[in-house]
Length: 297
Image (cartoon, rainbow, N blue to C red; front, top):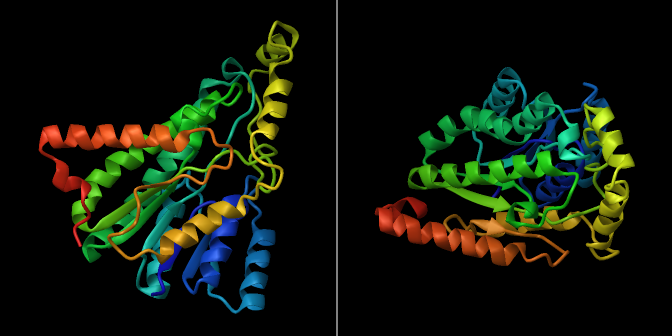
């Protein structure tokens, strides 16, 4: 059955790949467009060309997660043109690279704003419709780093993604009884095929970064980059994340898994996540809240 999707951060990377893969599956996909320089025309043209060449329903819509006005307008556009919104994919995010101390407090807040609060803004716009319909699906693109698979120089980003994961868990238990499903997709490291590292925020306190570069940690940045590059296999392709969303889309309502972890680095995130989620179930049982973990169909 065809579903209507809205995907944030679908100009490039995981979002663009997922938008195309889901459209080829026969879904109506609205790819949320955003660019740091404000010019998304290139990405819109690429999406339009893909739609024509493959005869699929892939559309674009401006979507700036830092603006509630932009988010509200995007959701309204989807509902006005299709009358429905079945799946929201919280994909947009931004990374940093450098010593944790070398970023300003404002940079930390911005990373949190993009990776966490931006998801909340989109939920504010989309969930009233889903709750009225008593159905829907929120898909959160998280990070395997949340489960201990983290490394130096990415501290602010990893902190934001961990916060996103916890927010998604809270939303899940509040929405299941409304008939709204939740899936957290936590990819492992990919060093090619995305713009994560090339677009990463640079330290806003460069003098501190230089101290780290000249001190006993002088080799840490390069070692982290080279070590990270060795984690995934040479043929690791971020298309696996898009394929994971296609697999998820094929599952019937009520059978969507809570977590999916497309991680080719074998870092053990799946095992760690299983422990965390099992603990949550046990805690909910003790609190008499188990009913809120089951989706009301």
